[in-house]
Amino acid sequence: MATTAIQGQKRALRKIVSASLKSLSQSQIQHQSKVVTDAIVNSTMFQTSKCISCYLSMPKGELDTGPLVSAILAAGKILYVPKLDTSDSSHPRMDMLRVYDQSDLDSFPSGLWGIREPPYERSRKPRSNALDADQQLDLIIVPGVAFDTSMGRLGHGKGYYDSFITEYIANTGRSRPFLVALALNEQVLQEQNVPMISGHDWSMDCIVRSDGILDPNNLLGCPTH
Image (cartoon, rainbow, N blue to C red; front, side, top):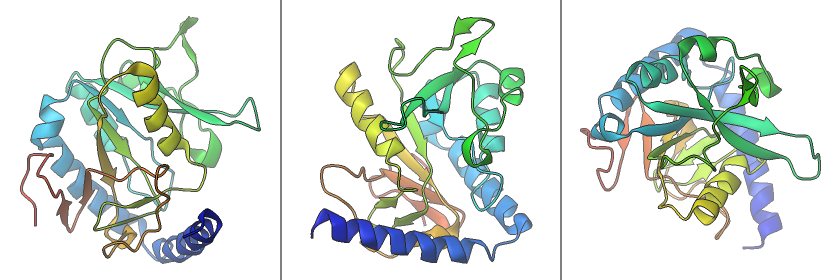
């Protein structure tokens, strides 16, 4: 199918899923967020990972990653979170910058879409960037608008994560990190319902939702249902 047609399908699906998410109360989102967070933290993959990238969630309409990023730091793991660089409007990009501790995390101001972002410097020194760091990213926890049971992902339309994953592998020469999507139950569709562009859109290895974990190869290392 032509790329333009797929892009049209993606836009339509974003509207449908976004509308359904508006019906969720904050208490429903918080309940699902706790179940998902507990599943991740108790997984073998989390416990054996040393370096993790995790997104900082939007204020509403999305699973809350606040408790998860705090758990990553409390476990003594290296944490990287997204920073959008829009200085060149024709080529916006996303960096992954290190978070050093909870007080560092708590100091981040809100950026685009109300999402907290780290400044590029801390105490007048550049933050570690995942693209330049010596440590291999073991796990990337990925957001999205919708997913399906065949591990397809629909992002917000900017291509930040797809581009970052491609750049990380190409520029560092490292193996592909394990890709885990966190989802509200209402964001997960049936098999092959998410339109994907071959060679550009990255599929997930695992999708964690409160109704159950979709992990075809049991890579996360926890019970599925």
